[in-house]
Length: 418
Image (tube, rainbow, N blue to C red; front, side):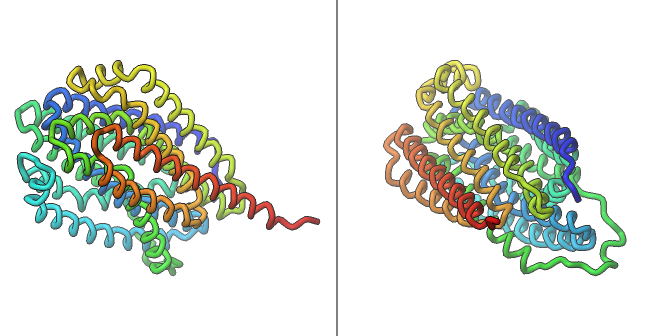
């Protein structure tokens, strides 16, 4: 399958715009909750969202695995292999989803004590949606690998809209944090139903080149990398929720939510880049321009957000969360900078991962573990926590640039000279 640049530009733009709308909707929900519930209850809401993000990185492993091999089998014109891949990933994701659901419900009382929350019920409600979430992620991977960006965009819109409507309604009716938990759970179930692909009746009747051990090996590598994403993206909020009082943890949650605009605003670039590079590499076509273009887009967006948060921090915090949260404004540009450095690193990781180069994954794991260790040791105030992250992300991005330059140098040296 050759890649149509016009289709990529059109559908990719639709997905990018859709993602911006979805992120805006999700931020609107969190901003409303921050104002309605106050810092103390908002810290619990942020905790639920953080746990969802932790699970989302596990789910993303299934999505990217589906995307990679659907793109590969599509290029090889192997519909039967795609069908067997889908069935295999569905089975694995369902088992993991049920395991996570049982574990979350069983550990809900422990979570209440460890994170200093008012109740364990929100954790139980949240756990109910996890099997649907992982199954839905496989469906998203199939859409991504087939470059069906319009329907992929629809799944993100569905998740955001259902969460928006359910959460606002239940919180308005007085269910507070429990209402937020139901909003998250029902949005995951609804999105799974919307994302289900059409089945191919004759796929099972054909010989298949699907190789489960190879796919499993790649899935494990992605799971390792997504573990690093969990460590870097969420460990700071988890540790702050543990080490600081609930009110202070709510302030930090607001800081993280604003600062992560960079990461979630640029995530679509990686979503589009990953299957394109796989297809072009399979076809023996150049793909460097897509990597450089993706890096440039992420860099421009990140720079704009960091600069804005540097010059207008009080305005941003005041407009988004209100006067109760203004104390975090001096740190906003620093948190945005740390997130920007990580977003740039991600472009390098996913580009090389799509080419089956895995050292960047291990570099990110080291960065994530280092972040947990250093924040556990140095957390006298929010400034110290944020400075730790900036230092680690600077080293991580530098290592990615060095690795990329080394790969490019090795590639040039391997070209025969007539």
